[in-house]
Length: 178
Image 1 (tube, rainbow, N blue to C red):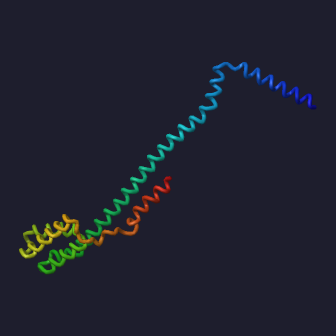
Image 2 (tube, rainbow, N blue to C red; image 1 turned 90 degrees about the vertical axis):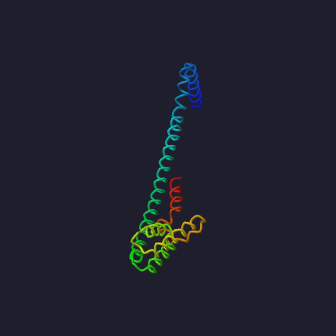
């Protein structure tokens, strides 16, 4: 039995030598390329696939940021329209005290909107001279506060809960994409 195994091993070794001896340099080169080409192709595909995934995730992140910004802008517009609804009757009334108080309150709640309305009231020829003077003073005070960085705190500076989580949402998107 051992003799048979020795003969088989010797035959295998001889066949191996003849096969290796029969290989031409071109065949050896082809054999090497065959063994290295598949992993190299996989590596190239993985690299370009990763680059494409990075571009897609960057696009999704930009889209998410634009969505958050759009929600913030929509919230600000809605809040301004509510302020106008609340103070419209007082600002357009003929009572200078009500008009002045409405502009003063609006200046505290939303200085930018108050600036626009004060400019409107100051340039409105139908408004009484006293309220036009008061509106002009309010407009100048808001502009002066804005230049010195001292704008009054705005009530809508904190957006609604779904928009307030925007930075956390960016972090959550980044974490999901990694």
